[in-house]
Image 1 (tube, rainbow, N blue to C red):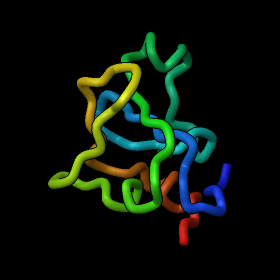
Image 2 (image 1 turned 90 degrees about the vertical axis):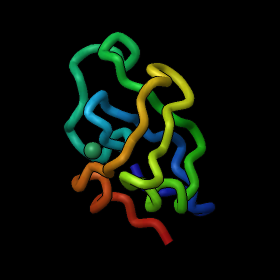
Image 3 (image 1 turned 135 degrees about the vertical axis):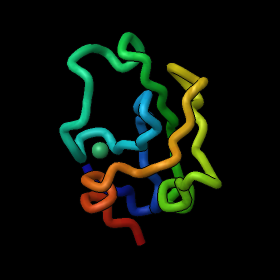
Image 4 (image 1 turned 180 degrees about the vertical axis):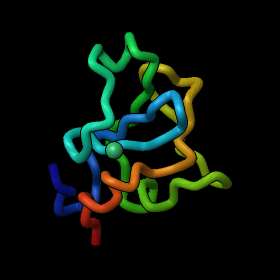
Length: 84
Ligand SMILES: [Zn+2]
C-alpha cells in the first residue's frame, strides 16, 4: 500500500505496545482480528499526523481499543510509506 495523492493514509493501526503501523506495509500483525487482539486504529490519517507521531505527541486510536495511543512509528512501515 502506498500513500494517497492527497497525502492521506486510509488507515493506521495501533498495536498494544504503542506502535503505529500502516496496513500491508509490514508483517507485524496479530493472527487474529485486530479488535480481538486488542489493537486500535484511526481512519483518514494525514501525512502530518503520521510523521508527527512521537512520545510527546501520541496519536490516539479512534476505533477498536480506544485506550491505545501510538507514540512510535513502526520503522518498516515508515520506510515503506513515502509521503510528500
Ligand atoms: Zn509496521
